[in-house]
Image 1 (cartoon, rainbow, N blue to C red):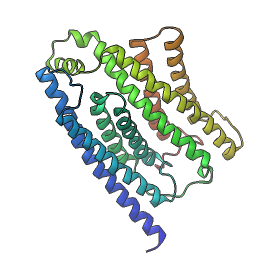
Image 2 (cartoon, rainbow, N blue to C red):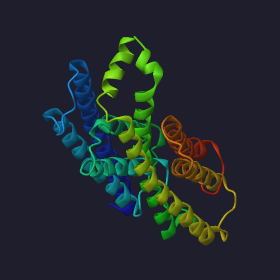
Image 3 (cartoon, rainbow, N blue to C red):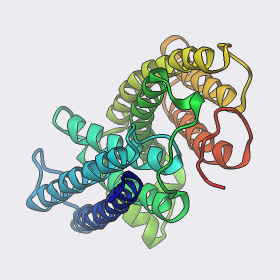
Image 4 (tube, rainbow, N blue to C red):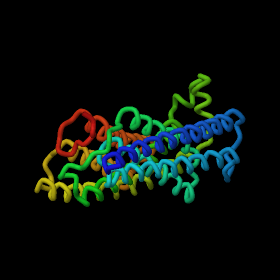
Length: 304
């Protein structure tokens, strides 16, 4: 068996492992969703400690993350490089980091009620990656063969994971404080209202989101710096107004505005939450639309 066939075999195994993780994520998502619906229907208060069903969901999420991690490592081994050179690899690596940070944060802060969102988000990202973004393993083009790219993308993945969790908390805040949610008599909205009542109060949601965004912003700042150094090594200039560079800076500006408005102008509540969500939407736009439909030196979707 030559190295090319070995790489192809490992890549195929990696894909199967990631698909196996998707299956376990599905069970975790359904477990958390069922638990939330049960709490909402019985109007029970959220216990300080996890219930048996929540523990089952957390165990399923941890098992899914472990399987997911194996799939990411196998993809890297099959390509003989770090596994984030195209949209498929960035998706499976980024979503793995999201769930890992969530599980770690869970040991520090009680944020288990957004576990449904985390499991569902990972399921959506992996499903999209597997069906739309998948490409065979390929060698890197010369511009990507730099350890500064490794640092740049690794920090971007970490920042995105923190922004992701912060966005989930901000979305919960927006719905929890929405007047139409409080006033609506529709059964579906009533169920949503009872589920949202299980979440921490508005002040705690806002505070947690702010803390996650601070960490994400620090990491995103370093993403910009590492990206500029990589660009200088690859194209002999730090900044060239490339599409990806511009959108990375736009995202940085949105979150800088969010933090500045919170710290100096007293922006809090819904305005702050919406700005955090806008920032994360910009990240998703940068990853999907910019990679798929814009041309530039930094656009490496891997898709034809």
